[in-house]
Length: 508
Image (cartoon, rainbow, N blue to C red):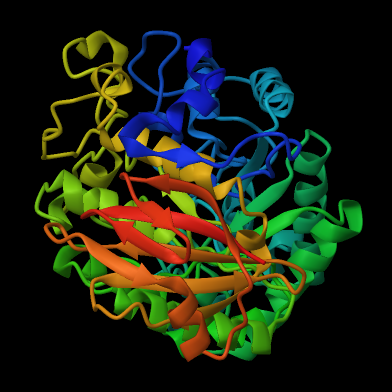
């Protein structure tokens, strides 16, 4: 697949995409993150379980997408298939490989300009973790243990009982995931050691799991703990990127941005009821521009240095395919609406293909569809999955189809690379004159770009960009077309967009 990585300039011709002339130096990194559920991605040793060597074997494909970083779901030993109940924070699960495999993956990614980000699960451990087992044994025998203060034990009542005692413990996610006592200085010192360990192995970022559960219902305490994690990681590597899971309202998200974290996933805009998928489903882009501009403004007011992290779905959310009724046109629209937003967008593996999966969590984590015709290329599905993959065109088939969803994702990410303003810029919504249009300006204070997306599945639309800017009291002495997807065209300051198409402009 190396030929794919060498043909990014060709990709922009796919799906009716074109870019401005070269000659302005190498394009900026896309800023896009690619999430991999490790056990379902790629299997190198034939046991049916995705592993680190499997990811290495597919790096040419990942590089061809144009992403800047990989987010790996937990790679540590665990009794569960999802690995969010950790047994050893400084080890690699045997089914995924070895620490040497991980080092090889990091080196291979670095050679391609891709950084690696690990899931950091610190709200809880596995109930089989040696720390917890030692603490429980001390409670049963009435002896002392340094680990008694590492968890939230109480005598007489609580969520879950310690067997053969009158002691109880907290477990926000179940009896098998006891909560750590995050006030413990010993726990914090251990977490600092774990962070430094993985940074020593080349990790350049961490995804913080379950942030709102650190101190449930106490945003200020949770923000303080997030600040501790951020300061700890950045003391070792100032460029370490941290992004947190705050699956809650916009108010809660903004409150936790006060921690100083780089990014929080934009849950308010994601999932079935979020503005991104609703805009794609209903062919209305105007709501996306208006809401995200407001969100962007509030974010920059709350945390001026923060970076939004827009996404559609992840390993906990039903796949886009079902929400958008298996309509590839709508999936392309959704991709346009979030991949060209300010921030660092996140693509969940297989979303670029249109994979399906809903209901039980296992169904949302089905094997990456490398081929619908050759099942030998696929991992086994998680044991309790009760859905089969509905998509019938895998990577091998979509790769050669210029109109495929896969090549639309490639083209959009390549387009995004033309505008560094899209990572940290400030967003201003523009009135394109039709509710199907998502129009906005992004500026980093030095240069400006305009994104125009036609979300209509049936109607070609025309936008007078100069008039839209003037209506917003924004100056414009000229504009340069940086690229298009879907066949959009410009004449002077007027842009014509076919159904499901977009254009990126730089303003003078």
